[in-house]
Image (cartoon, rainbow, N blue to C red; front, side):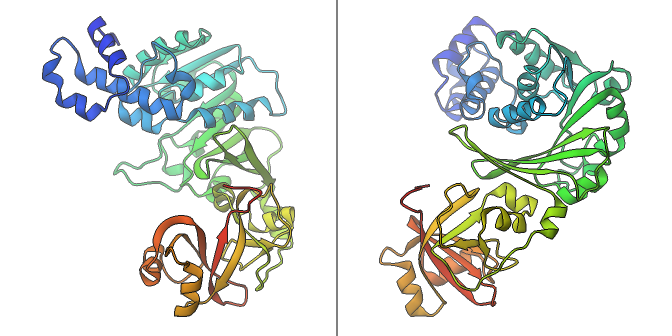
Length: 407
């Protein structure tokens, strides 16, 4: 992928401009490859949020919009490297990424190894990777333009394989099972483990975790990764060691934040079944909403047990306590009031501003329906939770972030 000096200068001069406006001005720059320039400008702008370390480096090339949209963020790529470094056997030398894409995961994972191979079937992405890796000081990565399945059949054995199968069916619909992905990791599991001691599989958070743990026979750990409370990835570590039942597999619920801090809880399905979980129909001083990874994992009893909080209802997934728990993995609030849906109580909870952040948890109405009924605008400092208590009462809970922990 070669860009002329005029095109490179145009990219530097317009790197912060709106790409839609630039596209309309193409005739003004006859010596500039405008489509290529727009791809690079848009890619760099996306990278400023998604891969800030790369965005600050002059000379990095970016792929088309779809590849940028599908690639991992720097935060999740760094977490994958942590998973590798913290595994029980840390004496690694070789690594292969079978689904290279833009190369973000490969770049950050390769830092754990002496030699790495990037495999990608799209030639343009291979050209971009071959250009970028040396700029990033990653000369130990070999770039291979090949279909991942063909490469897998004949590749030399390595310590780790990483694979990120496509997560949409042939008609663009979202998949829920590993067997619906391309390539199908469940049918390749034995082959993958015949080529590597460890396999790291990245899946969409839309996939059914319980189904994935049953479909794959050698899962040793599962990681549900969120960034700023938005669920991004489901990671599975495969190893041909002692096979665990689905109920014995450790599940890590991870929430990464912009401050580079993270909250992680670990549980198993067996523990989730066995842990006691007290329910209450009485609101205490504080209200807690677990983060997205915990909600995805279904660690509802585990959270109650670990943090000693009471659950409002088996299906509400909200918790309460009299003592403030600053390290609870999720949103934390101080309860300021509660009430039913009669007009007087609604007016008191909504306040004079008639503005609040509304959340529905196990309540027979949508956010839109309830806003219309309450005549409530969005925003402000008040948070309203419409939910159901353990005695089946429907009510609204008014909250504010605790002064000791502003969100």
